[in-house]
Length: 358
Image (cartoon, rainbow, N blue to C red; front, side, top):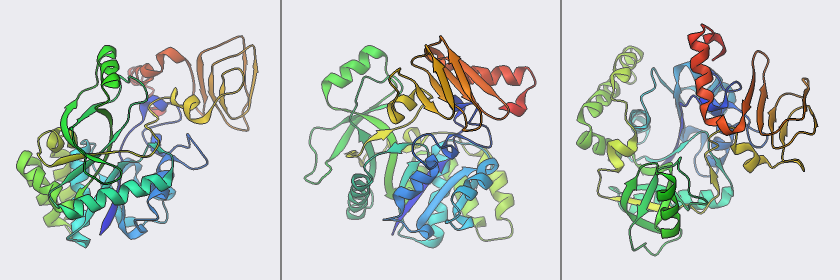
């Protein structure tokens, strides 16, 4: 059967001060009326029941995650004792799924992306599952047609011939790292390159077989965890074995080394909401170019992003191109052009013994 796997272990440091160690980006409401992870779970409801929806998150975030997804059984909020990147995350989900469904197909997605057109997303999910069911050794990933020459995404170079289905599935010719601007512009002109959006589909047994082939030590650790599932030693073994697993992405561990990898052209709108600068694109701006959430009064103020509450007024006079984020215990004021450097503020807080605000 088809299972939804939601990867929810990120920290979202670029959304400080709303995003914190125990309240990461996926637990925030950044677009629409529900949080990122709630919207992700909502998209799965038509094709994966609550009993076939799994969330992998950090132990420190598990309680807050469960509170936002109270429809899920508690044992399906899988807790990572330490952050070890996507390969161990996916491996942990795979061994859990196999406990319940030896033929389980995993549709894996991040918890913190915006995907428009839910109907097209569901059609793409079912198409990927059909491809995997028809060839159980197949590894399917999704590629997004680039809208601009991004230097922040990895790229997938597609092969020359798609199959006859819809959306089309191409072979993968190569994976490319985050490129320099001129290379990204070349990819855009070329037309054979997709953004790698980190959405995958495969059988649970297949991805574990691939990990055994390409990362045998990581696989061995997962097998020790699997052997302890359902026993009195489960928590202790997980706590001992998982942090010792190699920290590696599923792209490096498997996808860039396996042969039977296909890429589906994503038919849905997609945004990874990478920083505060994503909000004008997603939520729109007023006539002065300001993107506002909360109580705000601006005079001669333009092109600002302001986040506050309906109980706390932010007033601005004669400023432009600022990010202003107010929370109960911290306020950020930043030049918009330096949004990618917000994590430097967190480093400074730690250096100043102000870790309670991170």
